[in-house]
Image (cartoon, rainbow, N blue to C red; front, top):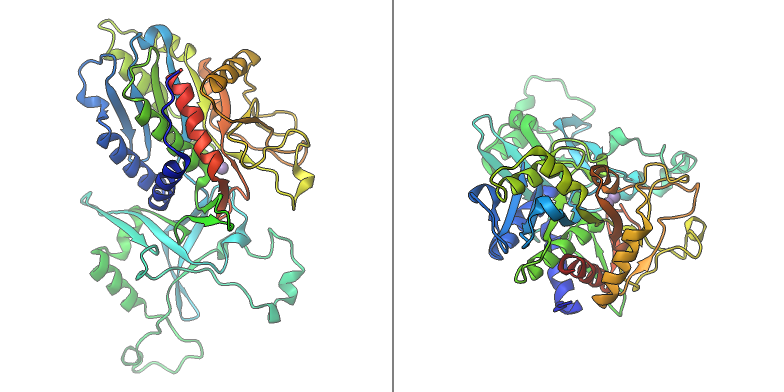
Length: 457
Ligand code: MN
Ligand code: MN
């Protein structure tokens, strides 16, 4: 097998750069498409027919993308190799009517997205990213909080001096989700506007000033926020952790760490024409159950395979798509939990993932009784073992955690229903779903090597 992997240092520098840009699924999408285009990939709709070696991608709603290097054998006959990850990450979304005032402040009302521990989002600098669409269809891109000159946003918490009652409450109780709202403005209403009004005990926020600021800065009215997708994410760039700098703290490793590894692996492999078409998926909405038109419970993947086959077969029929799906195989490229010495009780002892030992393959995910798991067959696990050996990849086999402590899932369960062979394989993380997650540089790099080896096999 040809294995011209780039070095760990080069790979991690590229990944950290990507992670700093890709703070939302739309930004991941835009940067991924930019990198694909730079590497000679073209939007599938521009192809009338496909030949071996063609580099194509198909995007959907600016949030989900599939890319492929067309193989020498027809997709209808041999299916595809897929590395499939997701680019959405846990966060806070702005509600459709987000602006409210309380006690002299203007807040953005937020709605949780994905599995977060609420307290982790308190009292830290937060950034605002997203897209506002005006009625005429024109769009305004918002990115506030990551340039040194930008303001940031913050959710307040009570001071310890007065936190006696709070300390008695449980983790889930003490900060209601409805209060996870960021301060957007703190200037009071100007005195001249109060003429004639009786002096109030509680000051009023200068809502007029806030609305004028939105209009003059972004050219939008408050009403335009009705048609917006605005996300609150941690402010700040990925950082190296520890004096040896072997860990990366970053927002959204889950699952940009695997998605980017797949993207980079496909781009690197694009020069060699494979027998079986090599492809990647960078999808949306995994953190909320893969729902919606850009999630993997949608028809996007099937439809894209049908579009590919239609350009390879003059007499394409639906049965060819079904056969191709069944003959495909996939690495479900999603993260798993690494053993944390401070929480040994949740480890599946002897089966836990460790840092610096490469990506972790999981035969199954799910809960205590494997509920919600696709449980990969041993034949495909053996095939992957062989491919990893041939590719010189360091990897480990692991379970997410101890039975009866919880559980988790990936897109594997939705992809395997086509009859595809699917194995979970991704980068282990510490404090997954926290505003700052930890990954090992070596593991990030070996994840890319693993996907490269699979796509080139
Ligand atoms: Mn994930
Ligand atoms: Mn997740």
